[in-house]
Length: 291
Length: 246
Image 1 (cartoon, rainbow over the protein chains, first blue to last red):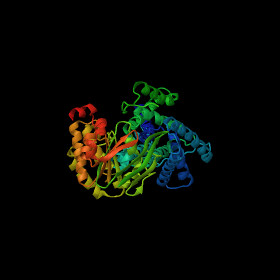
Image 2: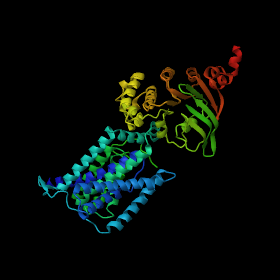
Image 3: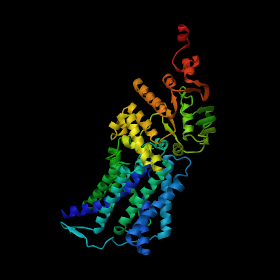
Image 4: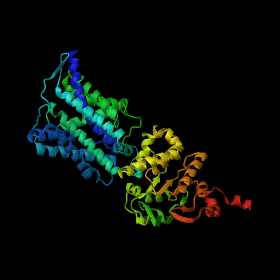
């Protein structure tokens, strides 16, 4: 019982991270029909950004948090402007390959800036772990869950209550129609990039204390987030959440009850299963596209 | 108000519009008729900024609109109700209308938006009834009303409609065209592109006939309705029919 609870705690914490990363994939896919395989690198930028701003520059944590997430957003802005918008024939496959290239570039750049060593940061607050029915819950896990919930609520508010959010949805539904209505579709795509990448960077910030940050941490996280997004249904906000938490929990249970060697395999087994059984994902609509 | 001079449009190397000129004066309702592939939609795409790389001149209120993108043209005061309506299906009717006013929101004209909303609800009472419903669940006619309402929300000075009667039952077509007459009486300038030539010419002041990228006829709508060539080609009557009648 204690064991199960312990696994669930760590599963939900990991799941929250996967969910935020999946959210980034989903919202960008919604706005642009593009899967950004460099998304994981923005998570890495967030984590390493926090290392620099918080522990090297000694800025207060909230400021460092915002700067690190902002840096991710700014990198996303540059990415869209320099690498995506300049493409003369933006076919999906070309763009996807560009994102793969950007991923390699970002990893290399990060290695030059931060070196090959892994960096660690302390927890956000120095409380003792909480004991619940014999299982320990790290306080950082609560931070992670809380911040993820705030981000999800913020995104939900943005999409459903603000004009810009609705305009972005309109662009996702029919770009041409949105354009004719007077909505500047290019700006909406740019904004989607910025929000998606800063979400990714924020995910990197909140996990920095529970993992070691290094230039190559993003790839695996990005792939896990992608699995979670596919699991829940690419393009669906709730799907990303469900996929993330499901993946996190199953992964942690698999590690606990079977073998820790299985950890990364579980995500990909789940991805294959969902592609066989329900390619549109748990929450997805039936008209899935392939390219 | 709108002047098109010697417009040439290309799709790759194919010239789809071969030197078309037309004019729309303030307060007029103008119809362009033509068969499939005659270049009607291409012409409208050029006017609304969807088609890059055309040659010639398009003047709106004495100003060149070449090189402007669609949002900029909406800002100038031209709004298109696109072919096939292109409403935002998953969003609610109310959201669709509000998004139509996107440029007005950006200009901070909230007072006008409220006014326009109530005007459109009055024009199409059914939209008020369904304002919370997803737009995709409306019937074809209601969707067309929504598309017109959405375009009106941007406060256009020139409303351009691309085949608003397509796929609608005759009774609804009548209702939509009636609405256009209504809007014209309120001072709106309207450019209407239609395959339903008879109905469109009946309500318009002047008409143009487009054939394979060229204007082959133009004139007062009543003259066009009486024109033998127009009758034969667009009003579904054969030479025989009206020789017999004479």
